[in-house]
Amino acid sequence: MITRICLLILWLGAAVSVAAAQPPSASGSAVGLSSVQQRLTKVGSDLYAGASRPDAAIKELKAILAIDPGLADAHMYLGMAYRMTGSEDLMGEARAELIQALALAPDLVPARFILAQLYLDLRRPAGARETLTAGLAQHPGQPQLMALLGEAERQLGNPGRAVDLARQVLVKEESFTQARYYLALALLDGGQREEATTELERVVRSGPKVADAYLALGTAYLDAGRVDAAVEALREATTVDGSRPDTRIALARAYRSKGLLARADAELTLARPRAIASAASPLSQRQVEPDFYLELGLVRLRQGRLTAAAAAFEKVLETEPDHQAATRHLAEVRKLREASRGKQKE
Image (cartoon, rainbow, N blue to C red; front, side, top):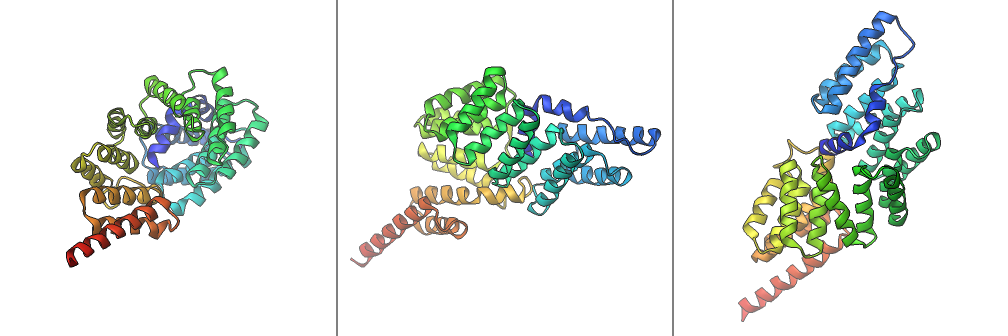
């Protein structure tokens, strides 16, 4: 979750300056407002820079809002801090604070952007689309909102619409890396892997280095059978952010494809849910666990450890009973075990 926030900060661009420029509330004394605004500016800057722990920021922002509850940017920062905790229990609080910020300042573009991103985190792209559409009604053509709307459309199963939105943004701002990244994801969903790969290569060359872009590029290479290139890109993803389990799982898949099972095992050890508990949020950890156990099962299957492979595939099906790959591989393991028992009886 915190890595996603970093992606937001790195690519938010002009919207960040909008947040920093929000005027203070009209309530309270001039002296008091000056002091409060200084505190608010500091905590906001620290959040954007990643220099503030979410719990410390939450405490400070609550103190600021106790003085002046009408500060829209304080509500926005509080929602952002709640989101950065990664706690599922606080996602409702994050949403409420961001909605309050927009109620106080409907033109607060960063709050609308962060609220939409929160909906995407929660796998509620329809909520993101509604939020972004409302923002674009106020700010037609606003590039950050348009780019993220494209991502919401992609997650809603409309890759063609997502491609159109991203390209509209890039016509006006060719260097807008976030829009190009979302364009690549939409092209991948639309089956245009070669073009998507080209776009992702442009993203990683443009900087700054973001794990998501290297992960997407490495996965595209892997799907195209370019395993060595995939390993290189995924290694870079783990260098950018070694705490993310999804990049470790993808790198394990690449090593497995090369037959390097010991290296795949090592990456899965680093991605194991209990090993990343202190680094990953509960929300992000829960979302990647099925992928972890699926890859673990595939590695164990290649190693001939059928009992362990079956246990891993069963773990996937505990959380996703309709998971087709896990179901298929579990059936394969059971057939192999039955065949092995038959040979032993002979």
